[in-house]
Amino acid sequence: MDIIISNSSNEPIYLQIVNQIKAMIMSGELAPGEALPSMRNLAMQMRISLITTKRAYEELERDGFIETYTGKGSFVKAQNPEFLREENLRQAEELLTKAVEKAKMSGIGIDELKELLEMIYN
Image (cartoon, rainbow, N blue to C red; front, top):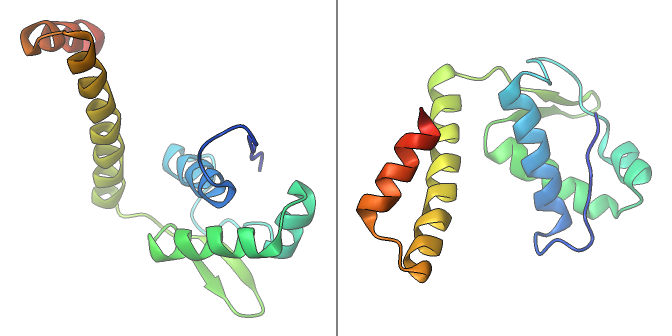
């Protein structure tokens, strides 16, 4: 499992871990039931605090992407297709919101933005 941490990112390290693991699960790179590295091993590999990896795993578990069993470790949770669709929709909405904000700042109207979106989509 390759996770790349950027120290120059405005995003906290734990969130970088969360987002990359979520992306791996959603793309199928990490399969249901697959074991994740232990929090301690991940912290050592990445040279970050154990508290940071613990926070990332707790968020992944809270969001329904992994399940953790005491003494056994953390594993990728089987995903409901509707849940994956909803998560993808949420991420697309987040990206589109940024695009709309940028368009507004640049004086690009909604008709032009729709046309651009249709060109990109097709």
